[in-house]
Amino acid sequence: MTEFSSRVEQVSISGIREVFEAAGEDAINLGLGQPDFPTPEHAREAAVEAIESGKTDAYTSNKGTLSLREAIAAKHERDNDLDIDPEDVIATSGGSEALHIALEAHVDAGQEVVIPDPGFVSYEALTHLAGGEPRPVALREDLTLSPAAVEDALTDDTAAFVVNSPANPTGAVQSVEDMREFARIADEHDVLCISDEVYEHQVFEGEHRSPMEFADSDNVVLVNACSKAYSMTGWRLGWVTGSTERVERMLRVHQYAQACASAPAQYAAEAALTGPQEPVREMREAFRERRDVLLDGLESMGLECPTPQGAFYAMPKVPDGWVDEVIDRGVVVVPGEAFGDAGEGYARISYATDVETIEEALEVMAAATDAVR
Ligand code: PLP
Image 1 (cartoon, rainbow, N blue to C red):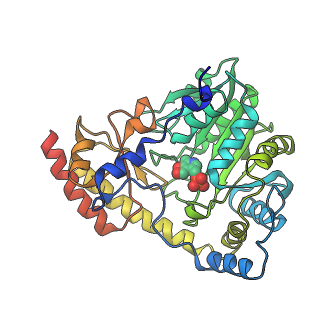
Image 2: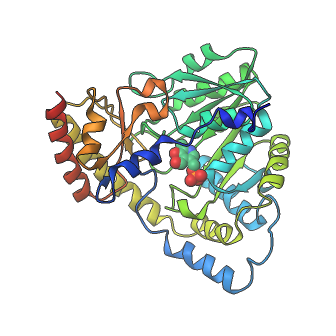
């Protein structure tokens, strides 16, 4: 008998944090996965008002307040042309918990979950914690996920596949055609598509579409959050939506693991979703400018990098030893293999920082590139 569950023994603490710690306090940190802007004022004020008027003294409904779920449904109608019943929404503790309850509710012991490689670290870990087996699928040369490769990876044991667009760690945005294909795969193979859309608003080229729009079956579960769109990572507020039956099953996990999402965060999220969307546009434009600065710099070093069309990450191919050299010289980037075996030979660079800092970091990267070539 072991002291710990075999599920938890299959998971280790993400290597990303170790990289930050190794780099020291004065390092320029291009490793972060969060926007560097303040939460919009109207969202902060709504939370303060809710706290001061005593609205946050009690649990909310397990699914979240009705007014927040109505705001989420209205958001999906406005931005995604999706008709969602507020009863089919669960407000969660960030997109992280939404992914967790989606996998817990749908994956049986030994079943497989097809995930992008490289991909966001939680997909593999949460699959293990649900008792499942991650089945990584290497991305295409342009760092998008190929629907054909996903279809090839399906077996009789596949419970779900994960689509993430725009993507962490690559910044890749899937085409509308790909999203249609993912919906077709979910329909035809009767397999669940978990669509992680937390970077929905950070799209610079192309457009964000959800496989949920195209599916004829109820085989798509959509995960989203206020974290990246409204610079609210610290508030821990996301949501998951899907068919009534799927939501009811996910609620069983959420109810016992979480009870409800934080009440002050729910009020802030409602204000963020229903209030002026200007801050979202401003952040997107700032990210676009930073991306262009970073890409120009990488190109001038001769590093190959598919143009990231969304999120706030770039993922260039880098020479052997590059990541260590860059970190030794005081700039934190994340080695690609932190996101899966197929990430080897790449680095994730986050540009959630100001242009001056990116320019400073580029000088360091250029020197590091010369040193390792
Ligand atoms: N999905 C992706 C692709 C992410 O990159 C992240 C966070 O980095 C999350 C989900 C989780 O977001 P949250 O902070 O809302 O839990």
